Length: 242
Image (cartoon, helix red, strand yellow):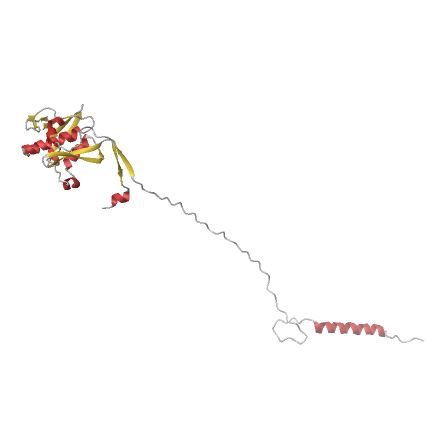
């Protein structure tokens, strides 16, 4: 006798459990909706996190500026050495008197230029004057072997006799006070010229200081070559002041 087949209860129970598990998993999963919707009571909000970014910080070193060194120039008074200062002779009353130019080197050129230019303001304030009335009265001057030759202009002859004598005395004493010069002869248009001496007598030859010693002021220091001296020049600021 054949018995009918029975399905095993155990196998059927396993099948039910599998189906139940599948259904349960489907209900507990996170829904994959493409649109926003209200959350269900058993759902957890999910917020997408941005991708991490990497930033690079560059530090620029400070710029150092190097200033050029400042040079300060200090101007100090300068001591100028004058081996032989120039003595120029001017007229004081009816006599001649020297005035020292301590800042001028004594030579024939500086001596003649000083006589041509005439007394300085300080000299005229002291009452001094010159019988050489204009620069063109002295044309030229040379020196050779201790004798200076002075070429005068025709305008010199327009001076009165006494003024001619004083003018010649000024020239003789100024020029013979130069180092190495002891005599002076005069020319007019490059021809020998007779000039008056202190006693009023004309002389055509070379003249010395002795020919005009009577016209030298009595308080004048002894004649001769001046001694060396120095003078201090003021600084630039001092010279710029009036």
